[in-house]
Image (cartoon, rainbow, N blue to C red; front, side, top):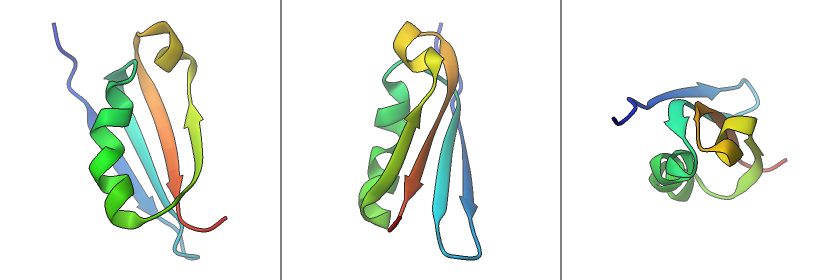
Length: 67
């Protein structure tokens, strides 16, 4: 059974972009955000949540831009 993945994209006043994957499992979060990351530029920070390592459905966040 596949999970439906959702992306939440936030753009801060300082121009920093946050991309959060909701409902992904394991490394699928990286696959889902790959094209967005490449289009926006350098990844300043990546926060992988517990679910990434356990392979369960969960959220992961990526911060794109200069830190």
